[in-house]
Length: 110
Image (cartoon, rainbow, N blue to C red; front, side):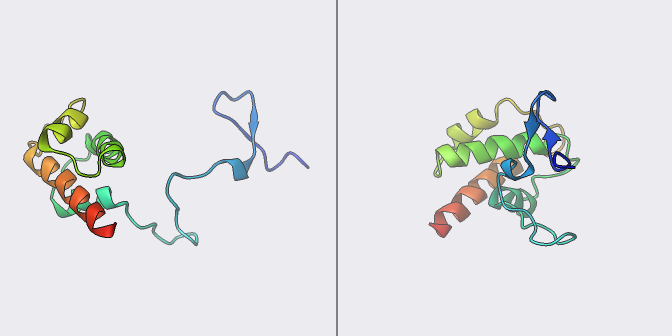
């Protein structure tokens, strides 16, 4: 059937071709192979900024957005970027450390 490869789009009214869907970052090259972590994800792990995981997705997105706009943020910039996210487990120092670490590593890669 010619339309077998088509999938419903976000509004479920328009078909979406599979090749039009692109991940933000490349995924694994083979099924079952783990994709590499984004630098900000690895920094959160290395800094011990992840505990229960409830707030982690929002913090990662906010940190990634910040570092895309400002690769060398001040502590005030970091606090402002993360201000919409609440964490009850870690306190915020390890989270700030993680964003600083990600920024430093990003700067090293340039």
